[in-house]
Length: 164
Image (cartoon, rainbow, N blue to C red; front, side, top):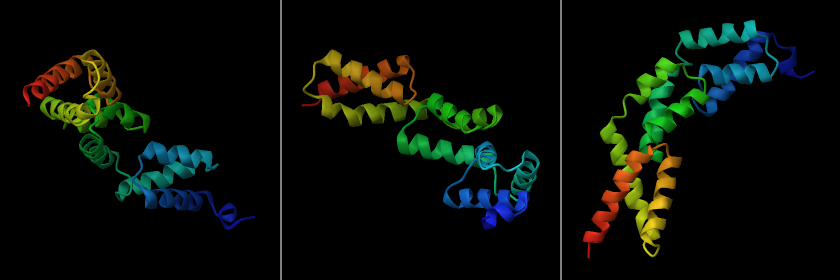
């Protein structure tokens, strides 16, 4: 038997959770899922995660806020994509709404415009309808609505056409 298998369930849960948190921040649900996969009894997992939450090692609100800041600025994701990612990680719906609410419509439009502007030069030799179709796809994969995508693409293409 390994050292971990000999340990009491709470000790095992603590060890697993701490190792996971060493690598990157996690949500409570992500930690719960990992503990269940490792065979930790639900009561032991809940006890350890309650204590970790109490001392601030697990904080879904801080996680969601940092996630939104990082993924919106770094990857240019729209509110819809950010919400989906947080839900997938088990973040409570109200926390998701609060964190994603920090991204304004103007921020979202600016991110879409920056992405479209950055990608346009690689499509310069393509027909305009192909450019539009590809740009809509790129923006849709980042979670932007079709209406916002079309507005931004029209503006970016018009700006590019005015430049010599």
